[in-house]
Length: 266
Image 1 (cartoon, rainbow, N blue to C red):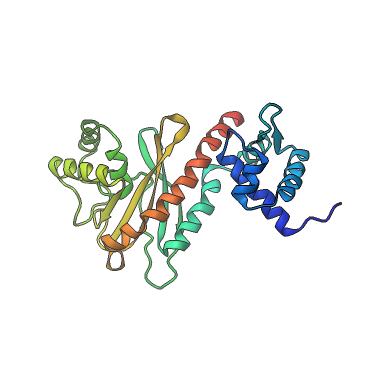
Image 2 (image 1 turned 90 degrees about the horizontal axis):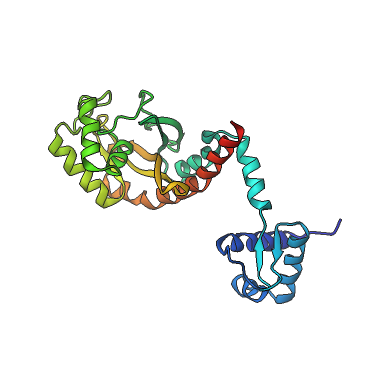
């Protein structure tokens, strides 16, 4: 077996990552320029990837494009995992970055259901609320984010039908249709939702939705970051928006693959 250096592996992976972003393919000179590689090194790496059937060269354009092998490997890997197993490393990483509790909920049968969590707090004071299986819609960040994605009339009807006396009810909980309407509009404008002691005294959180890009961005779940209110004011929660968005982007990449794998399995 030929000797393979770490740098060669890293460069080969960089080529694959580059071609993932360029579905139309790239010529060897473009690949070399993007990755600051000598043409000879780019050619050698590409020939190895072609030989392993990860990449092919189109005859007419001379562009290098990915084959289906990389995607097939990813699907085989995901097919052996359920959604929470596939999502857990992403939740763990987000919890580590923020140092707070991260939770994942999914939309199922017109309900939002908590399915996974990761604890990032390492001190004595941490947040890990005891709650039911279903996410209350108007007293949680996840629920309010989901409501804001619906037509306003539908969202209000959904909450009114369930009642404002949710199973989780903090001192700042929404209790009227007028308050709910204002919060839905504010949440829609921000692109994420806050929970400011609305589900529980002393608990604050930020939440964003997860959508399935393969199905016209249909809402499929939500992720929240929460913790004690004394250390999570609005400014601190807002600082979590970027890492939260990055984690959700990772989840949205695996969601269609999970759906495909589940469909094949059934």
